[in-house]
Length: 63
Image (cartoon, one colour):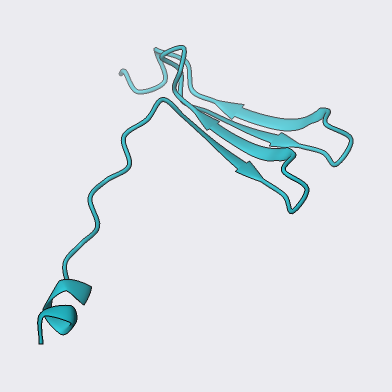
């Protein structure tokens, strides 16, 4: 019964400045970062070169 109850509990949040998602060879393909205070998503090609980036500047959320 304990296993069933625990399966419904939410997982704790992951708290970190950076997450790297890697391919089967261990090469970073997606980088999620807030390391420098700016939320950033970086998509990286199979050759290791950056292909696309989305970043929010400090003023993006202000009106």
